Image 1 (cartoon, rainbow, N blue to C red):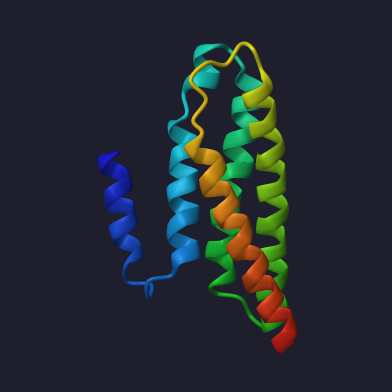
Image 2 (cartoon, rainbow, N blue to C red):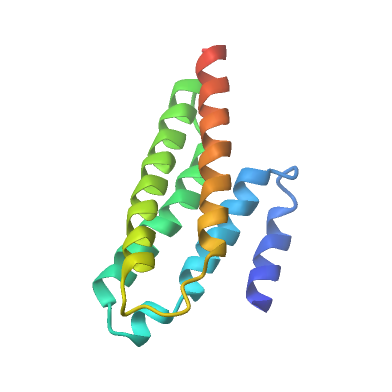
Length: 127
């Protein structure tokens, strides 16, 4: 988790951008979730890592968008990735084979989804 703290410190130069911060924390939590690999659920682990890290990547990319429309588009992609993560986490939670499911991931994902929804809505109304 020490690497996580170092990564988050690097984000501080970006004007306390909460959506960036929690999306990076979430992605690091997904990466640290070794439970799937331990039980040889490699495909689910791979999909979860891909979509879980893609949320933050799209939010990060939106910070350098060319227009308000481009900004909204990138955040909508992040929102779609969050929906995909929600699906993979549901499978993980529902599986008898995966023990010690990290419930914190659900809360973090919900926070990201709510923030994305508000930002997308505000951006659209300013449109």
